[in-house]
Amino acid sequence: MNYCIECHLKKRREQHAKNKDSVNQARRNAYAENKNGIKDWHLKYRRDRYQRIGRERLKQWEAANKEKLKLAHRNKQARYREWMTDSYIKKILSQHNNSIAKAEYPQELIEVKRLQLMIERLCNEKRKRVT
Image 1 (cartoon, one colour):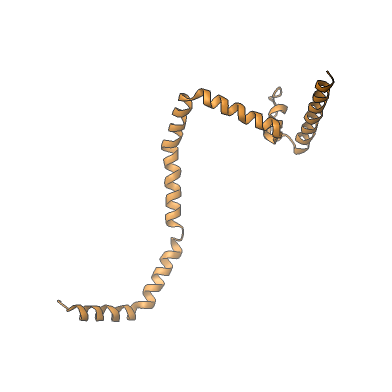
Image 2: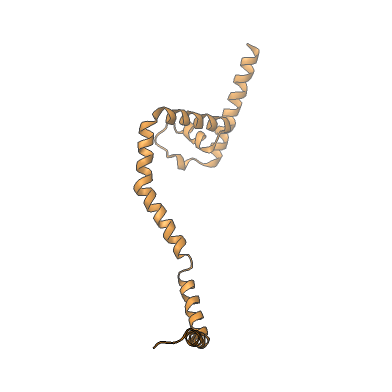
């Protein structure tokens, strides 16, 4: 079936006009079924790749840069001390008590301990000013 270009295009236009609604509906259905398909695929790919490669590279970097890691950890702990975060307070509460998990400390106890630490810090500052 050799058509001239004009006849071929005319036939395609007619077929498109005839099947327009069914084709559009099929495309809408396919889109609705697979709305986040590419996004989900990329998300899964990135997670799998990180599990496979990223953690391994991170461990290698940590082994090669122990001093940088220690310094970063010290800086992070200093920020926690300064800001008195919940995690810092829980760490202090659980330092000499291994029987209670950190997640089990009630928020009221954390707030009271934070106030106690603030009072102790103020007392220490006043003592330093006097001497």
